[in-house]
Structure formats: structure tokens, C-alpha cells
Length: 275
View 1 (tube, rainbow, N blue to C red):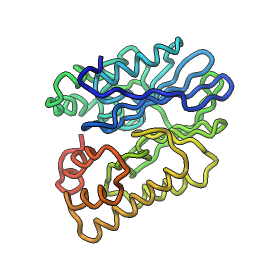
View 2 (tube, rainbow, N blue to C red):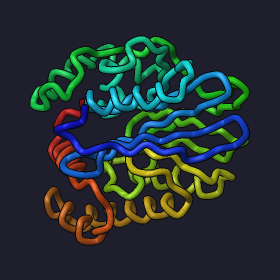
View 3 (cartoon, rainbow, N blue to C red):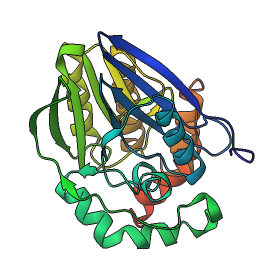
View 4 (cartoon, one colour):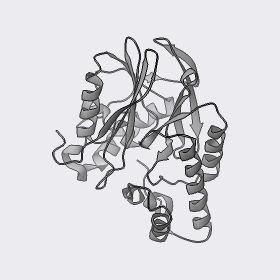
């Protein structure tokens, strides 16, 4: 299926009793940005988080979920950036989909505009938009014996993001609050984002599931704080656009997926659309 794209990585990242947590990451190479999606497998069913971006990866993620031999009870969309919900239209049209109310509203009102705006990707883009139907709010719910804590985090990498914590397992599904081993998508809200990450460092969580890259620990959370602080200082020192990219690539040569710069720099400095 992925003949013209690099292969994804799928892995079991935690096992605790009847609970198994899986992560599926699209390619780090070429112009991919290592989208990470996750599965919470319990005794009777699966809960998924995010739906991938490009159609072939969405199909591959669905196929991986299928190998687990259990029904998908629901899928949570973390936020409105298209690399997290485009794949719904390719591979998850039959699954109950949950999201924050503002994410639902955005996809309903702007989803087709966003999809058609990616026409240069050709058949890598799903041919339809799927709007989540179920609203999720901050609070607590037990699903097949696992306790979930849901939170709405504002003004970080995106204006509103859904996080899921599994406190008994020490797991935080942070999605785009954390970029693990990849360059970050910068926004104008880096002050608050840094504070949110610092708050994560004093929780009891041990495993952090990112929206991009491999599962992480608190060391990677701290490295994200350092990256954001360095980027913030560089911007304050007057480094615009390509100069900021050069600075960050040279300072963090170990971080992958430099294609992210081409996505956010026009928005950060040029007022381009955030669809």
C-alpha cells in the first residue's frame, strides 16, 4: 500500500494487566512529519487517538488496529490541525468519533476548505471530510475498566487541544503538546505552552504519547521546554523566517522532520491561513 511513501512504525509501548497501549508513527523521512496516533487496547475493545494525515497512513493505521482483533469503540480527535483528522475520511468513516466542541465546529465549517486546499497532495488526501459527532468535555470517564481524565488545553501549539490521561497507568496522551525527536510547530503562544509543559514535569505521569515522533518520557518534555525557550529568544532577537529555521536546524541537528518549518513559518510571520 505504501509503495510511494516510506513505511510507518507500529509498536506496543506499554502493557499493564489487560491493557496494552500501541503507537503508530508515519515516516520521519522525505517531507513527512512523523504523525503519531495511538491505540488503548483493553480486554474487550479499542480506543484510538487521532486518525493520521495522508490516506495511505490512515489505511495502514486502521489495518494495524484490525490485527488486534477487537472492535474500535471510539476514536478521539485531539485538535483541528488537518494532519490529525484528514485520515478519518479515508479509513474511519464507520467509527464513533469524539472531539472538543470547537474542533467539531471547525471541521464542520472549514473541513472541506482545508481538504481542497491540500490539492497538491493528490490522492494522498482522503476524498471526503468526516465531522466528529460526539462532543467530549473536560472530566472523567471509565471505558472498559480504564479511567480516563480529559482536559481542554488552550493557547499552546493550537488554540484548543484535547489531552487524555490514564492516571492509574502513568500515561499522558499529550499529542501536539509534545514533539518527540522532531522539530516543533511554533506559534505565538510559546509562553503558555512552556508553562503547560513545566506542569507536566511535576505530574506522576511517566509515559507521554506525542502527536509527532516516538513515545517519550519527562526528559523529552524538558527538551521541548528548552527548544521553545530557545526559539522564543531567537524571535525576540529579530530572527525571522528562514533565519529562524537555520538557527533551529543548526542548534538541534538531532531533531527530524524539518518539513514542519515550511508549514508554520508562513503562518507565524506572514499571516497565512491556519487551515
